[in-house]
Image (cartoon, rainbow, N blue to C red; front, side, top):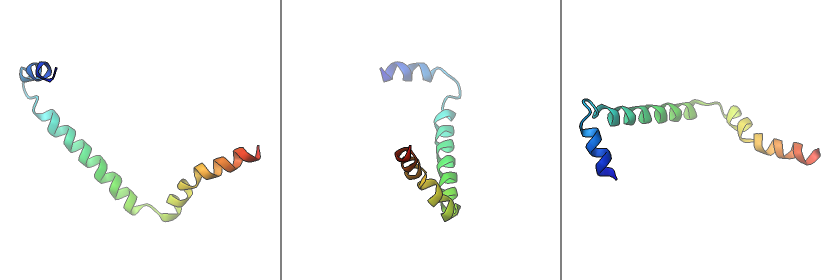
Length: 62
């Protein structure tokens, strides 16, 4: 099946830019997320990580 897709893609001019662009977007996204995680405040991370636990306690009281 891959040979059918490869054959069709070989006929498109400039198709080689798409894998490069996809890799670049992937790398930039995860680099930005990694930077955000490193610079996020500890209090915010703790607050967000406790949300599922707080929701469970609320459901038990209801």
